[in-house]
Length: 299
Image (cartoon, rainbow, N blue to C red; front, side, top):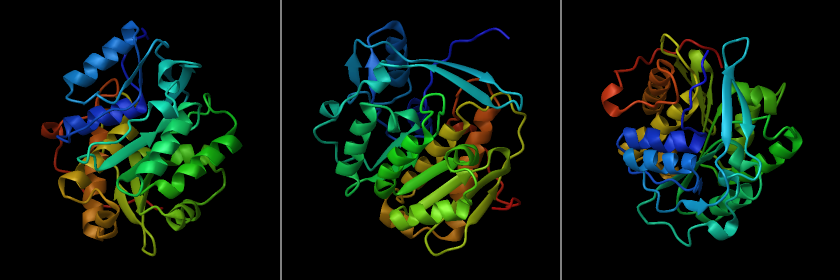
């Protein structure tokens, strides 16, 4: 198959996914002054994402090679050592965030490679008391092969997170043999309000403190490409909560089972739409069909 250049990256995909669903969105990260960086910058602006907080750098843009493994799932190779997205330092953090910013989404290898990992952790520590922090670990073992070190770094983010969204594939690599209930209970005990584990085509399961999990089935779709599906899920989750005034710890604590089923169905639908086309192309509001909410998978 012929190689095709595509702009991407997990936080970038989430930002565009949010903007396409009608949420006012800003992106914070290192953007290179090279041609790829210029293309990323232009695309964010065209999608309506605020880039005022971006850090421009002479470091080159990370190049990621995405293929499929024997199971048809994405397989990644990153050429990113010393590149723009990793070069953000604590000194690059915005001195203060606009009061309209209600939540901060973080994820992927920028949680675990320096210096950007320390910058993101400092931001989460600074802002967790006034804004919701949502974390998607989005593990990339080829970038962070030392899983013990990855677990240590991820654990530092957990107490600051109101939402933790992770895939079953990532958890099987990062925490082999550990039951999902045990993992989510530990995250909830550390301070999270909502933990969601996605199961690919089978859907997702949401966990809250002291309550039984809520299960949402997947949506049948002719899969073209699964890259960006988890990012679309994350964006749709945050968009649904924001548009109903629930994007806060208080709002999450008030979520009933019916509401949680509805937001999971919305997020699963967004993920399915993304899988139906090539490249990480999250849906717009106009592309979101009415989802089905019938749960049929075991947690």
